[in-house]
Image 1 (cartoon, one colour):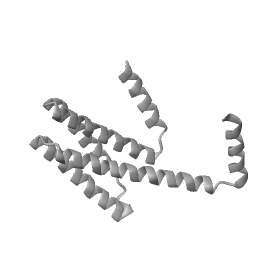
Image 2 (cartoon, rainbow, N blue to C red):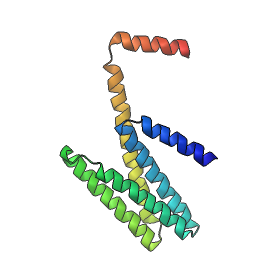
Image 3 (cartoon, one colour):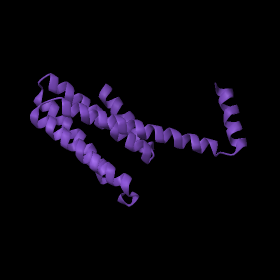
Image 4 (cartoon, rainbow, N blue to C red):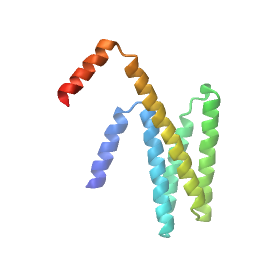
Length: 146
């Protein structure tokens, strides 16, 4: 029952998300999959480890395919980083060792943090560029609610 509710929540979040939020959701899902794979590795659950690594690989492939290569260096660098993370996942799965998985998880966590900071800065710019009356009105409305 909990899994169904969690899946329904995620589906709603994805359907309402903008592009930036979707990337964050994908990073978080890949990070979670790698974390699960590491747990399965420590429990000697080969099938579970392989399933979760495959899930993380599919997410990374989706991220790589969605890159806008007209963006130049950023796109190229991300493609190379995704390729490197994919190789780490393959290495960790094949050798059945944790360090490549831990490195992959750490790299994706760093990327997620960067996207979260970018989203926060973009959101702050949008609010600061709003007309003064709109910002004051929003503050007044928040004061009334809170």
